[in-house]
Image (cartoon, rainbow, N blue to C red):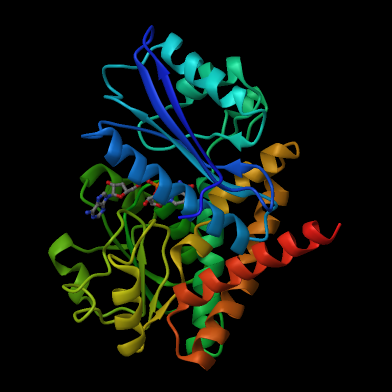
Length: 346
Ligand code: NAD
């Protein structure tokens, strides 16, 4: 996949086994979260970290950030293996890269873990606001998704106004909740689905008119916009033929089960897909802002740019007939190549 550097971290004393993958640093230091997971083998962990770090390169590049792509995985059971020493040892490994890799929170990690890592290295973002960090990135992520959704609406309906549009938000978690705030405020007809009753209650207690949709009905629902904000791979062979919507725009990562196959299937069905890694980049933008001294207003302004970028991607996709994810990938690659060219000629 063209990675620049892979660091295998091994510490018998704490039992730490981790892999840090730096995919590309042409645009800037490689930023990406650390995931702790019970991988079945080191090979499986390696495959995951290679794939995830490459994804970060594209996300940063398409978002116009001066960041490269990286990611780390810690192999082990997050509920049993964690302790201060293990996290600080991992922090020391991050520090040994001298800022070429900047870490953040991902699956299996907590704010407390990030605090331990921070004790050994400055190269960490996503720390609590009380420690000078950016805190929860979800409001910025949700705002970016909302911008991407509006750009898609503009292309389909000729206006970015969402009032009266039926929007299904699947996953009423952190991002889904903030997204619903924007949609309700604009007068969209919001429908919501989640597997947990308490998450749905949080929404309906706040907005009595938001309609709850049972999970088995989600894919057959009459809606204008489908916003996946829970898990990945919800766009697949089984669901795409059933979808009754004009737009897919949500926060979940890796929404297309198989990029090439399902990106094309959406084109064939005439459904506009706002690429996930483009419109959910608000979280990364929030981290980036932390590097410059955190300012949420500035992060939100930067997330607003997602409207313009999505518009450019959708226009190029419409005129070329290619899937939107492919255009977004090409734009990211073009930016990296252009900047690399500038650096080469210096
Ligand atoms: P979250 O855990 O707060 O929310 C996810 C919600 O989805 C939960 O309420 C959960 O109950 C629900 N859910 C899980 N499985 C479901 C299913 N099968 N059907 C319906 N609902 C289901 O997570 P989040 O931070 O809101 O993130 C949502 C998605 O966006 C994730 O895929 C995440 O990777 C992605 N994302 C988040 C951010 C961020 O800033 N938080 C940034 C980029 C991408």
